[in-house]
Amino acid sequence: MREVVATANANVALAKYWGKRDHALNLPYTGSLSITLSGLTTTARATFISGQSEDRIVLEGLEADEAEARRFRGFLDLIRSTAGIQARAEVAITSNFPVAAGLASSASTFAALTVAATRAAGLSLSSEHLSLLARRGSGSAARSIHGGYVEWLAGEASDGSDSKAVQVAQPDYWSIGVVIAVTDEGRKRVGSRAGMEHVVKHSPFFPQWLESHDADLEAIRQAIQDRDLKRVGETAEHNCLKMHAISMAARPSILYWRPATVAVIQRVAELRHQGIEAYFTIDAGPQVKVLCLQHQRALVAEEIGRVAGVQRVLLSGPGGGARVVEGA
Ligand code: PMV
Image 1 (cartoon, rainbow, N blue to C red):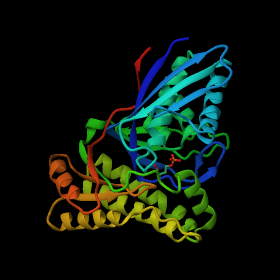
Image 2 (image 1 turned 60 degrees about the horizontal axis):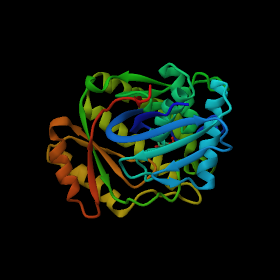
Image 3 (image 1 turned 135 degrees about the vertical axis):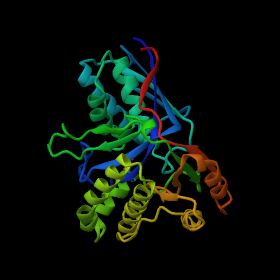
Protein backbone atom coordinates (compact mmCIF):
# COMPACT_ATOMS: atom_id res chain seq x y z
CA MET A 1 0.00 0.00 0.00
CA ARG A 2 1.10 3.58 -0.46
CA GLU A 3 2.98 5.68 2.05
CA VAL A 4 1.44 9.04 2.93
CA VAL A 5 3.30 11.88 4.60
CA ALA A 6 1.42 14.63 6.41
CA THR A 7 2.39 17.60 8.55
CA ALA A 8 0.64 19.44 11.36
CA ASN A 9 1.61 22.34 13.57
CA ALA A 10 1.58 22.55 17.36
CA ASN A 11 -0.93 24.88 18.97
CA VAL A 12 -1.02 27.05 22.06
CA ALA A 13 -4.23 27.24 24.06
CA LEU A 14 -5.47 30.70 25.06
CA ALA A 15 -8.50 29.22 26.89
CA LYS A 16 -7.27 25.87 28.04
CA TYR A 17 -8.52 22.31 28.04
CA TRP A 18 -7.88 20.97 31.53
CA GLY A 19 -10.05 18.07 32.66
CA LYS A 20 -11.86 15.22 30.88
CA ARG A 21 -15.46 14.21 31.41
CA ASP A 22 -14.73 10.95 29.56
CA HIS A 23 -11.25 9.42 29.57
CA ALA A 24 -11.68 6.76 26.90
CA LEU A 25 -13.10 9.23 24.37
CA ASN A 26 -11.03 12.29 25.41
CA LEU A 27 -14.11 14.38 26.03
CA PRO A 28 -13.44 17.67 27.80
CA TYR A 29 -15.49 19.35 30.51
CA THR A 30 -15.09 22.68 28.72
CA GLY A 31 -14.41 24.17 25.33
CA SER A 32 -10.95 25.53 24.54
CA LEU A 33 -9.46 27.94 22.04
CA SER A 34 -5.96 27.98 20.56
CA ILE A 35 -3.65 29.40 17.94
CA THR A 36 -2.10 26.89 15.56
CA LEU A 37 1.60 27.77 15.51
CA SER A 38 3.59 28.30 12.34
CA GLY A 39 6.98 26.61 12.14
CA LEU A 40 6.46 24.15 15.03
CA THR A 41 5.80 21.23 12.79
CA THR A 42 5.45 17.48 13.16
CA THR A 43 5.76 15.20 10.16
CA ALA A 44 4.04 11.80 10.20
CA ARG A 45 4.65 9.03 7.66
CA ALA A 46 2.21 6.13 7.55
CA THR A 47 1.83 2.98 5.44
CA PHE A 48 -0.44 -0.01 6.00
CA ILE A 49 1.23 -3.28 5.06
CA SER A 50 -0.77 -6.49 4.83
CA GLY A 51 0.89 -9.54 6.32
CA GLN A 52 2.77 -7.56 8.98
CA SER A 53 1.86 -8.88 12.45
CA GLU A 54 2.16 -5.65 14.49
CA ASP A 55 2.19 -1.89 14.04
CA ARG A 56 5.70 -0.51 14.00
CA ILE A 57 6.03 2.95 15.55
CA VAL A 58 9.22 5.00 15.27
CA LEU A 59 9.36 8.27 17.19
CA GLU A 60 12.19 10.70 16.46
CA GLY A 61 14.16 7.85 14.91
CA LEU A 62 13.74 5.45 17.86
CA GLU A 63 11.44 2.47 18.21
CA ALA A 64 8.56 3.49 20.55
CA ASP A 65 8.62 1.95 24.02
CA GLU A 66 5.80 -0.38 25.02
CA ALA A 67 3.59 2.28 26.66
CA GLU A 68 3.91 4.66 23.73
CA ALA A 69 3.38 1.87 21.20
CA ARG A 70 0.18 0.82 22.97
CA ARG A 71 -1.23 4.33 22.71
CA PHE A 72 -0.44 4.53 18.99
CA ARG A 73 -1.81 1.03 18.31
CA GLY A 74 -5.09 1.89 20.01
CA PHE A 75 -5.32 4.97 17.83
CA LEU A 76 -4.47 3.05 14.64
CA ASP A 77 -7.17 0.50 15.57
CA LEU A 78 -9.68 3.34 15.36
CA ILE A 79 -8.48 4.28 11.90
CA ARG A 80 -8.55 0.63 10.82
CA SER A 81 -12.12 0.24 12.02
CA THR A 82 -13.15 3.49 10.25
CA ALA A 83 -11.52 2.27 7.01
CA GLY A 84 -12.61 -1.37 7.39
CA ILE A 85 -9.07 -2.71 7.03
CA GLN A 86 -6.94 -5.09 9.09
CA ALA A 87 -3.42 -4.34 7.89
CA ARG A 88 -0.84 -3.22 10.43
CA ALA A 89 1.00 0.06 9.95
CA GLU A 90 4.50 1.43 9.75
CA VAL A 91 4.51 4.89 11.32
CA ALA A 92 7.38 7.35 11.70
CA ILE A 93 7.01 10.67 13.52
CA THR A 94 9.49 13.56 13.67
CA SER A 95 9.09 17.07 15.08
CA ASN A 96 11.26 20.12 14.55
CA PHE A 97 10.84 21.39 18.15
CA PRO A 98 11.40 20.00 21.67
CA VAL A 99 8.92 17.16 22.19
CA ALA A 100 7.00 16.29 25.36
CA ALA A 101 8.09 19.48 27.08
CA GLY A 102 4.83 21.38 27.16
CA LEU A 103 5.02 22.50 23.55
CA ALA A 104 1.99 20.40 22.64
CA SER A 105 3.86 17.88 20.51
CA SER A 106 1.05 15.39 21.11
CA ALA A 107 -1.31 17.81 19.34
CA SER A 108 0.79 18.09 16.19
CA THR A 109 1.74 14.39 16.35
CA PHE A 110 -1.82 13.08 16.43
CA ALA A 111 -3.11 15.69 13.98
CA ALA A 112 -0.38 14.78 11.47
CA LEU A 113 -0.85 11.06 12.08
CA THR A 114 -4.64 11.31 11.65
CA VAL A 115 -4.21 12.93 8.25
CA ALA A 116 -1.40 10.59 7.09
CA ALA A 117 -2.92 7.34 8.35
CA THR A 118 -6.50 7.97 7.20
CA ARG A 119 -5.23 8.82 3.72
CA ALA A 120 -2.86 5.81 3.72
CA ALA A 121 -5.88 3.66 4.69
CA GLY A 122 -7.68 4.90 1.59
CA LEU A 123 -10.04 7.32 3.38
CA SER A 124 -10.74 10.88 2.32
CA LEU A 125 -12.38 12.56 5.32
CA SER A 126 -13.75 16.04 5.99
CA SER A 127 -11.75 18.25 8.37
CA GLU A 128 -14.63 17.85 10.83
CA HIS A 129 -14.27 14.07 10.80
CA LEU A 130 -10.46 14.35 10.98
CA SER A 131 -10.80 16.57 14.05
CA LEU A 132 -13.10 14.04 15.78
CA LEU A 133 -10.56 11.27 15.11
CA ALA A 134 -7.50 13.34 16.09
CA ARG A 135 -9.21 14.10 19.42
CA ARG A 136 -9.09 10.40 20.26
CA GLY A 137 -5.27 10.42 19.98
CA SER A 138 -4.82 13.54 22.09
CA GLY A 139 -7.51 16.07 22.97
CA SER A 140 -5.62 19.12 21.79
CA ALA A 141 -4.84 17.39 18.46
CA ALA A 142 -8.47 18.05 17.50
CA ARG A 143 -7.49 21.73 17.23
CA SER A 144 -4.25 21.25 15.24
CA ILE A 145 -6.24 19.87 12.29
CA HIS A 146 -7.20 23.47 11.53
CA GLY A 147 -5.01 26.51 10.96
CA GLY A 148 -5.24 29.94 12.56
CA TYR A 149 -7.53 30.49 15.53
CA VAL A 150 -9.37 27.33 16.50
CA GLU A 151 -12.07 26.47 19.02
CA TRP A 152 -12.68 22.93 20.25
CA LEU A 153 -16.36 22.67 21.10
CA ALA A 154 -16.81 20.60 24.27
CA GLY A 155 -19.99 19.01 22.92
CA GLU A 156 -22.69 17.27 24.91
CA ALA A 157 -23.17 13.87 23.30
CA SER A 158 -21.90 10.95 25.39
CA ASP A 159 -20.42 9.32 22.26
CA GLY A 160 -18.35 12.45 21.53
CA SER A 161 -19.87 12.98 18.10
CA ASP A 162 -20.18 16.75 18.67
CA SER A 163 -16.82 17.27 20.40
CA LYS A 164 -14.70 18.62 17.55
CA ALA A 165 -12.69 21.69 16.66
CA VAL A 166 -13.75 24.43 14.27
CA GLN A 167 -11.81 27.32 12.81
CA VAL A 168 -12.67 30.69 14.38
CA ALA A 169 -10.43 32.77 12.08
CA GLN A 170 -7.86 32.14 9.35
CA PRO A 171 -4.18 32.65 10.19
CA ASP A 172 -4.02 35.86 8.15
CA TYR A 173 -7.20 37.31 9.70
CA TRP A 174 -4.93 38.59 12.44
CA SER A 175 -1.15 38.17 12.27
CA ILE A 176 0.04 38.41 15.83
CA GLY A 177 3.49 37.33 17.02
CA VAL A 178 4.12 34.37 19.31
CA VAL A 179 7.53 34.09 20.97
CA ILE A 180 8.28 30.82 22.73
CA ALA A 181 10.76 30.83 25.57
CA VAL A 182 12.22 27.37 26.06
CA THR A 183 13.32 27.16 29.69
CA ASP A 184 13.86 23.41 29.96
CA GLU A 185 14.29 20.99 27.06
CA GLY A 186 13.92 17.83 29.14
CA ARG A 187 10.83 15.64 29.12
CA LYS A 188 8.18 16.92 31.48
CA ARG A 189 7.60 14.99 34.67
CA VAL A 190 3.80 14.91 34.69
CA GLY A 191 2.18 14.60 31.28
CA SER A 192 -1.03 16.53 30.59
CA ARG A 193 -3.13 13.35 30.60
CA ALA A 194 -2.04 12.37 34.13
CA GLY A 195 -1.90 16.00 35.27
CA MET A 196 -5.47 16.89 34.40
CA GLU A 197 -6.82 13.62 35.76
CA HIS A 198 -5.11 14.29 39.08
CA VAL A 199 -6.35 17.88 39.23
CA VAL A 200 -9.97 16.91 38.52
CA LYS A 201 -9.86 14.49 41.44
CA HIS A 202 -7.57 16.21 43.89
CA SER A 203 -7.77 19.98 43.47
CA PRO A 204 -10.23 21.79 45.75
CA PHE A 205 -10.57 24.48 43.08
CA PHE A 206 -11.55 22.40 40.07
CA PRO A 207 -15.25 23.40 40.44
CA GLN A 208 -14.27 27.09 40.26
CA TRP A 209 -12.32 26.39 37.07
CA LEU A 210 -15.43 24.91 35.51
CA GLU A 211 -17.64 27.75 36.68
CA SER A 212 -15.47 30.53 35.33
CA HIS A 213 -14.05 28.98 32.16
CA ASP A 214 -16.80 29.78 29.66
CA ALA A 215 -16.56 33.50 30.38
CA ASP A 216 -12.84 33.41 29.49
CA LEU A 217 -13.52 31.42 26.34
CA GLU A 218 -16.21 33.82 25.16
CA ALA A 219 -14.09 36.89 25.92
CA ILE A 220 -11.18 35.45 23.93
CA ARG A 221 -13.38 34.44 20.99
CA GLN A 222 -14.85 37.94 20.83
CA ALA A 223 -11.49 39.67 21.27
CA ILE A 224 -10.06 37.65 18.35
CA GLN A 225 -12.94 38.84 16.18
CA ASP A 226 -12.09 42.40 17.29
CA ARG A 227 -8.32 41.85 16.85
CA ASP A 228 -7.95 43.16 20.41
CA LEU A 229 -4.57 41.95 21.70
CA LYS A 230 -4.99 43.51 25.14
CA ARG A 231 -8.24 41.64 25.78
CA VAL A 232 -6.99 38.35 24.30
CA GLY A 233 -3.73 38.64 26.24
CA GLU A 234 -5.18 39.61 29.60
CA THR A 235 -7.82 36.90 29.43
CA ALA A 236 -5.33 34.25 28.27
CA GLU A 237 -2.99 35.14 31.17
CA HIS A 238 -5.85 34.89 33.62
CA ASN A 239 -6.99 31.54 32.23
CA CYS A 240 -3.42 30.19 32.28
CA LEU A 241 -2.79 31.29 35.86
CA LYS A 242 -6.05 29.65 36.95
CA MET A 243 -5.07 26.36 35.30
CA HIS A 244 -1.69 26.40 37.03
CA ALA A 245 -3.14 27.62 40.33
CA ILE A 246 -5.67 24.78 40.57
CA SER A 247 -2.85 22.35 39.68
CA MET A 248 -0.52 23.76 42.33
CA ALA A 249 -3.35 23.53 44.86
CA ALA A 250 -3.96 19.83 44.16
CA ARG A 251 -2.80 17.31 46.78
CA PRO A 252 -0.13 16.27 46.00
CA SER A 253 0.68 19.45 44.13
CA ILE A 254 1.63 19.72 40.46
CA LEU A 255 4.04 22.52 39.61
CA TYR A 256 5.08 22.71 35.94
CA TRP A 257 7.19 25.85 36.24
CA ARG A 258 10.96 26.31 36.50
CA PRO A 259 12.61 29.41 37.98
CA ALA A 260 13.07 30.74 34.42
CA THR A 261 9.33 30.32 33.79
CA VAL A 262 8.64 32.83 36.57
CA ALA A 263 11.45 35.10 35.37
CA VAL A 264 9.84 35.26 31.90
CA ILE A 265 6.42 36.02 33.43
CA GLN A 266 8.02 38.93 35.27
CA ARG A 267 9.87 40.17 32.22
CA VAL A 268 6.62 40.18 30.24
CA ALA A 269 5.03 42.38 32.93
CA GLU A 270 8.02 44.76 32.73
CA LEU A 271 7.79 44.93 28.94
CA ARG A 272 4.17 46.02 29.28
CA HIS A 273 5.26 48.64 31.75
CA GLN A 274 7.65 49.96 29.10
CA GLY A 275 4.79 50.19 26.62
CA ILE A 276 5.48 46.97 24.68
CA GLU A 277 2.33 44.89 24.39
CA ALA A 278 3.19 41.36 25.49
CA TYR A 279 1.21 38.67 27.31
CA PHE A 280 2.18 35.17 28.45
CA THR A 281 0.56 31.78 28.51
CA ILE A 282 1.93 28.41 29.66
CA ASP A 283 0.66 24.91 28.92
CA ALA A 284 1.48 21.77 30.93
CA GLY A 285 5.20 22.40 31.05
CA PRO A 286 7.82 25.04 31.87
CA GLN A 287 7.95 26.88 28.52
CA VAL A 288 6.34 30.29 28.16
CA LYS A 289 4.58 31.48 25.03
CA VAL A 290 4.47 35.25 24.68
CA LEU A 291 1.82 36.92 22.54
CA CYS A 292 2.79 40.25 21.01
CA LEU A 293 2.27 42.50 18.01
CA GLN A 294 3.70 40.99 14.86
CA HIS A 295 6.03 43.95 14.17
CA GLN A 296 7.46 43.77 17.71
CA ARG A 297 8.13 40.04 17.63
CA ALA A 298 11.90 40.33 17.08
CA LEU A 299 12.20 42.92 19.83
CA VAL A 300 10.18 40.80 22.28
CA ALA A 301 12.24 37.73 21.35
CA GLU A 302 15.46 39.61 22.04
CA GLU A 303 14.22 40.79 25.45
CA ILE A 304 12.91 37.35 26.43
CA GLY A 305 16.06 35.64 25.14
CA ARG A 306 18.11 37.67 27.62
CA VAL A 307 16.20 36.38 30.67
CA ALA A 308 18.44 34.16 32.82
CA GLY A 309 17.60 30.49 32.33
CA VAL A 310 15.98 30.87 28.91
CA GLN A 311 17.75 28.34 26.73
CA ARG A 312 16.41 29.54 23.41
CA VAL A 313 13.52 31.37 21.86
CA LEU A 314 11.40 30.26 18.91
CA LEU A 315 9.52 32.74 16.73
CA SER A 316 6.05 31.82 15.63
CA GLY A 317 2.61 33.13 14.83
CA PRO A 318 -0.68 31.80 13.49
CA GLY A 319 0.06 28.91 11.10
CA GLY A 320 -1.73 26.53 8.79
CA GLY A 321 -3.67 23.35 9.44
CA ALA A 322 -2.70 19.69 8.99
CA ARG A 323 -2.13 18.58 5.40
CA VAL A 324 -0.83 15.82 3.20
CA VAL A 325 2.56 16.69 1.75
CA GLU A 326 3.42 13.47 -0.09
CA GLY A 327 1.61 10.44 -1.43
CA ALA A 328 -1.88 11.91 -1.78
O1 PMV B 1 -4.09 17.19 24.46
P1 PMV B 1 -3.41 16.94 25.74
O2 PMV B 1 -3.92 15.74 26.43
O3 PMV B 1 -1.91 16.92 25.59
O4 PMV B 1 -3.74 18.18 26.73
C1 PMV B 1 -3.36 19.51 26.50
C2 PMV B 1 -3.49 20.33 27.74
C3 PMV B 1 -2.96 21.75 27.68
O5 PMV B 1 -1.95 21.88 26.72
C4 PMV B 1 -2.39 22.13 29.04
C5 PMV B 1 -4.08 22.75 27.40
C6 PMV B 1 -4.58 22.80 25.98
O6 PMV B 1 -5.75 23.18 25.82
O7 PMV B 1 -3.83 22.52 25.04
